Image (tube, rainbow, N blue to C red; front, side, top):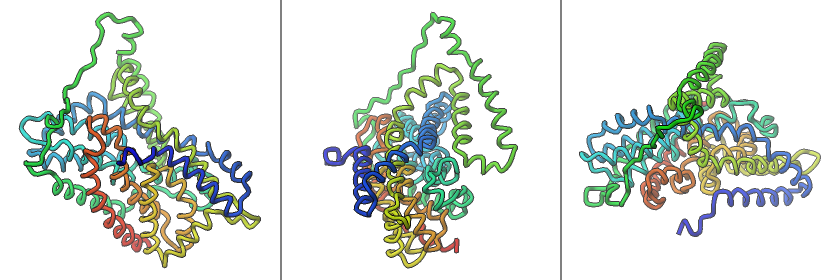
Length: 447
């Protein structure tokens, strides 16, 4: 049913463009002004789009390296039962997502396959696969690869129309607050409990073998007769020289100022991660192959982000000389539905989760929401940094029922979305009310 009637995320993006354009014109902006705003804003997120693509690629590259594979085998030996293995996968998925969501998705998927090869435990392959998706469902927006937090922390990434509303919001006001640390702990504990309680009993358990999944791995063959160019591609010499060159920049970067401030810069974050991936793959040929395999995972980001930027520009088109915009009108609705920062937190959480069902892109959707959400937050006296985090806490939960970001994981596991959604939907049902209450209660600690 879902596969037949649920449109592609790109179709939703186009639909939102049309709806927002019509709304702006009904609001009083001229069709020409709307068209000009869309065109002017279309490429305003180009640097940020490329940087977010590299977040995913860097995680994929690191996760598929040989050292990561060796670590994975050691990690896979730790659980003593199938049920504990499912919880183990879930916690690792969330932990890795705080560093990089691409790393979490790929490493956790491969970890499930490794655990499924063990003959001494019976692992429900579907429940373990759902646990591997926890990082994308409730983890990564609380960590370093949070696109909303990263965008707000980088002045160069913030569109001019948004900069005048929010200014720069550093990590010290978002992901590096004690409130977010507490949120991560609660999310991890709740996720682990749901994994444990929803793991099938022995009579309903389905292993990879039961599902007809082939877990064999085929190692790539290396030709014996190598040309000089091939030998150079298989030599670590160039890798070591490039890594040494980049290491000098990294040391100088972190030595000159606040390390947290530098870490909040996407250019530094991505450079460190990619350089680490280059080193882990050791040979240029290995890195090139991993990079090529990673690129398809970011096609949605590259295609859709420019349209989200165009939508944000349309939202801020003034309808008259007074400068009143569609974003201002939507902000007024948020203000009218809220009596203060606490109720505003609940409204933002519900709205962000609902919109997330249709636009499964944390960074792109924040560009759409930010102008009016931040305007309302300023008017109500709500903490802007925690408003970003309320968005982060609730926005990703619809990923549990919208399979868009599940596709790379499904490819690794050899499963279909319907095999996992039953388990992930349970996570959504439990997490959603907890997220709303947690966000609202913690908002009071900033007053």
